[in-house]
Image (cartoon, rainbow, N blue to C red; front, side, top):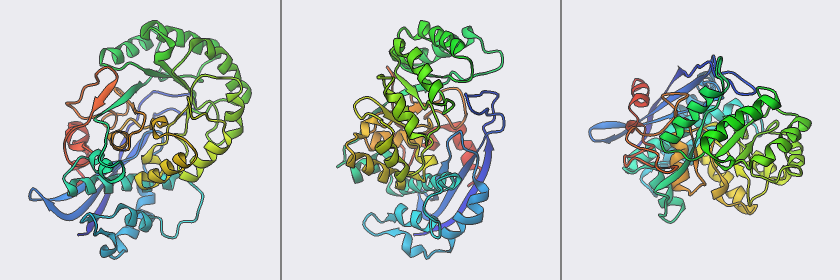
Length: 387
């Protein structure tokens, strides 16, 4: 049992949309295939992965360092004898050989993308959906058969007035979502408040709307927005300031008693621990948005969940960023609080399996081995080209 090849291609997910910090006019992502010599249904098992939006493709890093480390290692060290399968933890250790501690930047995306493909292969070798593999190994066989999801959108876009923003949000409700999210911080406070009120007209109540500043604000601006947002009773106020400015987040908690969310731009269990130690995040109401594809993959994600548990946080407070099927499997198999969804943007990577429909804010998972990429036809067309 061995990995015979790791392949990468860089795909464009460019779009004229923008949040408060970046535009996506040149955005890319890496797509990875981990080819094995294990045969199922007459074909070699191939695991696939890709990185979430907001971080660019990492092909150069993979080719310069990470792929070679796996291919040069002794294949016998990658065999999980207990499960008669590949060992994602041993492969992860090989990927991170000769990497210094700290510096959790772009390399976490390169490793996380390969790790996703490894876990896809592991579940295919076992002949089960990944969420079921995770439940069997880490939750005594108990999984969530459906997962709460919200629709992320509301980006700034040339010519996008309030009526177009409302039409977008109405479309999400029509497809079964109950909670939607929009961007703030890319316009004046007054304009953002007008946009928020336009969306609330559609969703019916502030409790069905989350807002996301993408780390744009300094402390003064974050607090000004907090005071203005408070009367709306929003679902959450997300990433007001820089993701590593824990003092800003702690100060903000003194001015905003509604739910807040952050964590999508923290890429290690050490950073997660510091967030919970120093940021004033509240385990009874706030949400954590760590994204496995950006943060060294599922192997590291399991460490992050252990840190949370040790610090008194429930896994139900985690709603991962990324809107992809890997996080959906983790949410179901490890019993997280839900998952982000991108119904319209970052296609074909956003969204879930073709036959799966959102019902009253929840989705189920396809009963196919692996992450389920094969059940999303347009995405699988991109992936199978690597095979």
